[in-house]
Length: 230
Image (cartoon, rainbow, N blue to C red; front, side, top):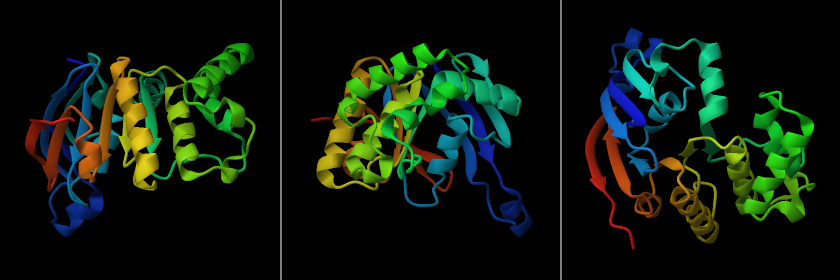
């Protein structure tokens, strides 16, 4: 099993001191390599917290999390940083790009942490720019781009390290319907090529573009079903 979570709980000190429940309450799930999964639920359900744990940006308070047979729930921050850089690509709703830098520089950022040779870095960046149709705007400043172009840059950045899994947090939330369709078509294309895709969303259209929908509410999985695509 590529991803295995068992009885994951997440509490924050502020909630504990106020007597409120955990953000996550006993989440257990399994995801096979190559799945395309939506995590869907209302605001405050725990979707983003779950994605942060899946992406090794945060650790659970309780429970176990195995990613590709490695127990990441017990890793140090330094070990988690290595896992993130090697195995995980992130696509965020508001892009998280460096607005004053150009497209090429933004896509290259994850590779700068791996200390690879410049020629190798340039080759990997151009590979993703060509894949996403961004080669002609490689040296344009990000602040001059449209929302759809920015999201494609964010996807190129997420892919540049050839990660095993792409985690997307509301990737179409800042886009119009036409650009949302383009982004979801690209996600499906990446999934068809073998990438594991996990998307947090509150949008029916996005969730139904995935092969599986995990519904959560109040920090618990309330339903896990196969989407009807088409």
